[in-house]
Image (cartoon, rainbow, N blue to C red; front, side, top):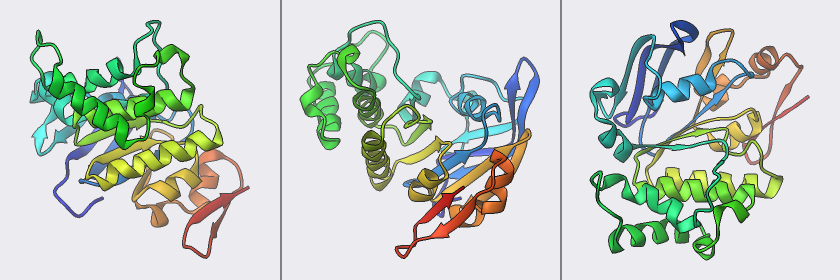
Length: 258
């Protein structure tokens, strides 16, 4: 998946908890500027896979390579400079300013006791400006909408300068307008050369955003490859246990209907 040298690879990867496999036989390759969409029903192991790719859970089998290096041998401080995470939603009891949260990304390259200075503040503000949310810099996170918080998390990943961004259902709790805004921000990341892997329950979103797709279910990879090849009505109907049909619009976009 992807014609350039891969930034993120998984080979024969098995993931799970406490030695119990949830998902196995995972092979993926993600190059710069590519978007890989992960689809599958609840409980299929998508979040567990992401936690393993982020180095938060040890793999049960196989290996993960980050820019050609085994993830297990890379110090966490170095991983943070290459790999960023955008969670499904931001939950924090602290009333951080939006700019302070983005600064956490810009500070990933600093030493453990260094404090962010002008350069990091400039990076954080530049990331927010590029997403059109610079006006939120002084706002408290706890007062922002779900869509605004998600954009702040994407700005944090931008400020981090990460080459790879992992997104766990980034639009799951958002309304229609904010789903569009976040989708545009994801496209902007890819256009900058960032590799993006995201999970979604929405086949239309995967078809609109993704270059490639990985379809999982029943503890295994069911299909992987280009979006048009992987996302057939038959496969998605079987995965989600509901009859679906695939439609191709005049502009070439794919849509799925019940």
